[in-house]
Length: 159
Image (cartoon, rainbow, N blue to C red; front, side, top):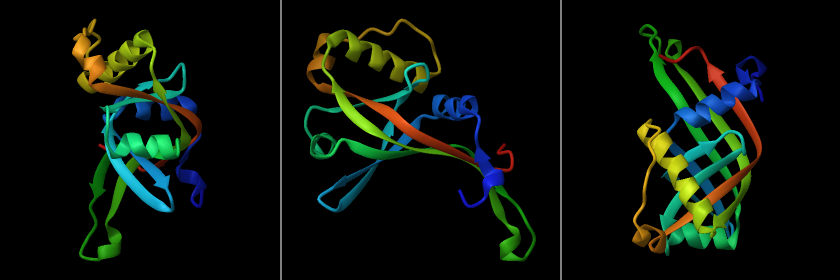
């Protein structure tokens, strides 16, 4: 990292950012063609995994099948740091996490259901005993991204 003073080295802080965000961008690379997509997600800090869901068919699913190695990014709080009339006096306060990993499809019904619960808890900020209709499992693919490496970066303290 070029600016070491901005690096977040505490894994607990990185986990907090991953747990507090609702959108994760996944970067796929298939046949030298990049594809970046924002997805709602859930994070399981104990397992070091992100969970996503997709339709049964579609470009995201095709990308995972073609190349399950991905890069991901989440951004936590972001705010503008105001300056004066000099454009370079303006900046951003931000925090972000970037990582790499491998995605695999969850096919075991119990694993799929638990992953969907993790997603719902994170997206809703509620710890309910979520239930799912059987047809949801038929129309949904659930994915687990095993985090292999991760870095965090922060500039200032976002509001």
